[in-house]
Length: 142
Image (tube, rainbow, N blue to C red; front, top):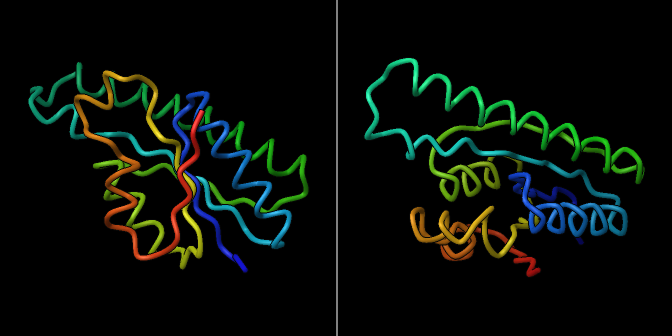
């Protein structure tokens, strides 16, 4: 039985599928969904702290708000309670941290991010979460 379900969203088709899966499980178990979007700040570590960094961060934050707004809309349409948050840092670390903070019984992630390039550059977030998360992890495939 699940009471708190964490789902990571990033605006990709696979994260939409992960969100649908999380909402479906939440309906069955009458659980709360915690949706998070992580602005991957590690991408900017080699850039100077100037307007470029701020512009890129702002764009990603805007994308995150859009993704979380869509997640709220989908969950509310299904009658599922949802809480949403933007975080910054390494996606895998932030998902694991959020799982602990929300006492998640289940974490739902997509099998890969927005592109295969992300996977090559950042490593597999889903693999990191599976290896490091203290709770059940459901990896959704396309």
